[in-house]
Image 1: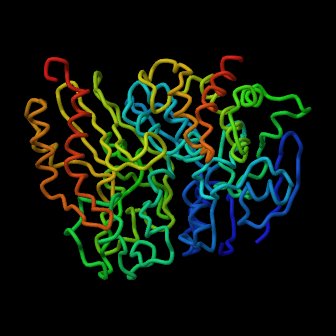
Image 2 (image 1 turned 180 degrees about the vertical axis):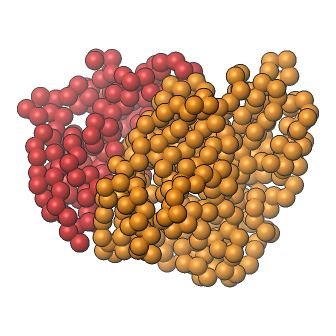
Image 3 (image 1 turned 60 degrees about the vertical axis):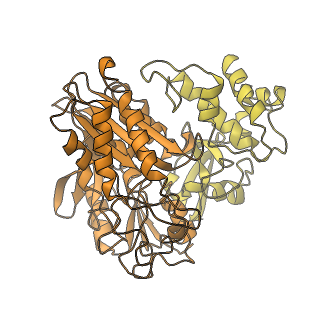
Amino acid sequence: MKPFAYARPGDVVEAVRDVVAEPNAVFLAGGTNLVDHLRLGVARPDLVVDVRTLTSREVTGLPDGGLRLGAATTNSQVAADPRVRERYPVLAQALLAGATGQLRNMATTGGNPLQRTRCVYFSDVTTPCNKREPGSGCSAVGGYTRYHAVLGTPAALPDPHAPETCIATHPSDMAVALAALDAQVQVLGPDGERTIPFTELHRLPGDDPSRDTVLQHGELITAIDLPVLPAGTRSAYRKVRDRASYAFALVSVAAVVTPDGELRLALGGVAHKPWRATRAEEVLRGQQLTEDAVRAAITAELAAAQPQPGIDSGNGFKIPLVARTVLATVRGLLPEEQS
Amino acid sequence: MDAEITLRVDGEAHRLTVDTRTSLLDALRERLGNTSPKKGCDHGQCGACTVLLDGDRALTCLALAVAHDGAEITTADGLAPAGELHPVQQAFLDSDAFQCGYCTPGQVCSAVGVLEEFERGWPSHVTEDLTGRPEMSHDEVAERMSGNLCRCAAYVNITPAVQQAGGAR
């Protein structure tokens, strides 16, 4: 492992200042992803700034009835919080579907959405990867694509040598729920505080696959806010994976249904970012939320999907799997007479 | 780069100087000679290095020692301080819940954490009613122990052992 300096500043302002001052510095929270990357050589910082004990470890009520999750709250703590279980079951279920008890005790609210892709080529420093080594190419195209993207990609079989090519998926379950809930991200940076809608935190590869989010160097997540939901809102998270436990999603679905029949839908395991299904939501707007309507809406969402061929027979299976998983998830949330 | 830290391990305080790159697992095993937590994968995938870190089960291979200055750590060794077995350890013996034993200290620490999490009423992925109190069923225990791999596949006895230890409380 490359040597690095370690700092635990007195407060978050100092932590931001430390990272801004060193171009090759990173924040450390729970460490479940970063420490592994330090060991693999995927992350090679000169300075590690530990913020685990600097941000809030509390879940607090907001004046409007929402909840604020301090960045240092652990994934298990948030999943067990009675207010989250009662009011945001989609989030509790997403957290509990991710990782293991030990990892959830370490992983934090601020760190979870910032975990890196589990693309095997990203983790393997001997292979080209535009996300890890910008400009080196993409080894996933035409390779092992079972866990790779079908949405937000320019084409099936994009140019593996082009510097912008990346078909990796974002691995977080929590992030898919937060995208469906319209959570807000509280950020502290060198120029002060700002709020980012969760759906705008992550980005598509664009011309720089090395950047997962819109955060600038030195910007730190201090809390994530859950907006209040109308009374009677129902929500659920459903994850399809290769094992019954402790596996990343092949596809996952976070669905929120308000009492007046509005559906908010986000998909995991299908894109470079947690995928808010805005096209499906548009198709459904003003319509009665029936199974047929949802089927038509998800079909519209998936019209742009690009199955990736691969040495493992590719990931085209994800497209019908997403449609079925969305239907199964939403079916459980419909009022009795419609299901 | 070096840093000076204090770790309280199985009730005893240790002052030591570590390289900032040292994992908590390596600090315990190589520096303090506590070989109870095992190095299986060193990537957070197998659970063999599980200890109770400030009261909660955690993976020492994914923790930097320097980031846990002042931490209170209990290893499987520390669960039986005077040689008297912890109920979870006794249940593993009674149920024949291991074969080669390499994963066992991690399994035992994880199981102690699992029982504490039941005690707190924490739900799991297989809990039907998120607002209720989960039962210590086979499926609940198996799901909660999924972060501890056993290459001998002693799961068929590990799950009942954890249930037995929970019931014996």
